[in-house]
Image (cartoon, rainbow, N blue to C red; front, side, top):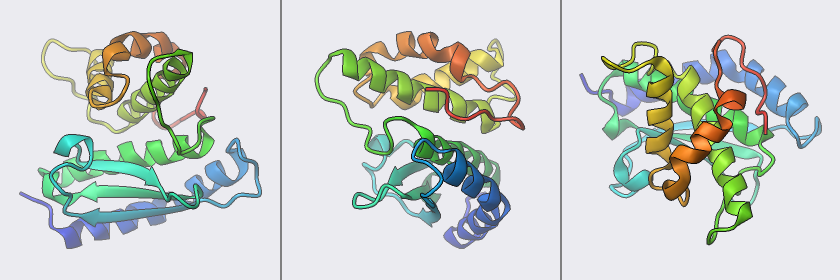
Length: 194
């Protein structure tokens, strides 16, 4: 059964209330920007346009306000959610991204041009963020037949990098950062390692 925008926003608000203390602690005290910054996290449910994000495939995305990197937004594409289970997975996935964004060395302005050594760093950070998000969102807890949980997570990370400047080297960078980025125990999430 499809999720309505009202249902989505209610669940998102509940999720934010339940996780706000952890987010504030992580992003205020442990972030690489230091303890003086208070990050603001907002979750909005909306019908996403055909081309946003990732050419219309993703059920959610995380971004930062252009003028102020301290405002982190999670957008849930309610028109792409199959059911409440997918909403829960999307909230957990995007929430992990929001925590990683506030501690990632590249901050929120992750951009890439051409192919050079800087792009490799960008791609490794993006791969790491996707591995971490797929590790904790629960979507790979019961992997498809013939796949392990690890293969399921790698496949998800590769799909996420498929519309990215990292498309050509996605598999290689996912393998390169796997050991340091894979979260084995979702209840004990270490800070972003890169």
